[in-house]
Length: 287
Image (cartoon, rainbow, N blue to C red; front, top):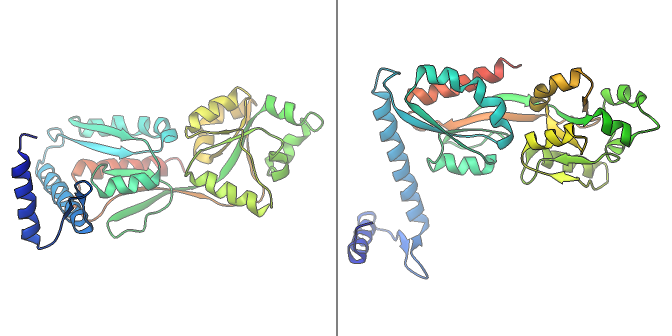
């Protein structure tokens, strides 16, 4: 910035005098106090409201310009965007799209700071500032290739297929090399709890954030893959020709919620409302 240290120091002191509180710690380095963080948050909200009001005053969709930043878990981008973006672009050709890929906990903070406009996540968010809409509740499956089944259950194949279609037992799962999502994943969290109920630890061969990558490895007979039914739908061709199987897990009855979340305490541009509507319709059409 083209501003002297003296001018910046005078401005900060003036700002603190205006609000009659300390907004910055000077030592050991310059950083915000709790009051400073609250003021920053308030200014961020004012900026968002100003931008959104300006965009809403433009009545012609085709002339509206702007941008949307959407948070989507990495494994869902391929399945979600192709069914949404072409339709959105017809209504708002001058609105650009940016995709952030992370997990729900990070998306919440980004949403509150105005860094993203909406996100698709797992756990519904309890906040007076955030609106949640349930997209789906998904069952969890174990996806495994036919060749890996033969290799892991040589004395029970192919009869085991009919048994596993009714629900694969936890002890049978332990005989398979299995991959699961990494880190703070909702599916991983509930599966680890499920293993604890069985009074046993569970060791994954691979923990990886990209479900698409894990499913590709599953197709190559490297491992079985724990995933939700959202991903199973993308495997129907391989399942129908007998290359892959998607087995329910016996005793694992937890359904994983999927939500879309956005700020409800600010006026949203019409194109963000359009994007939310398309996401809702996309999931409901798959039910």
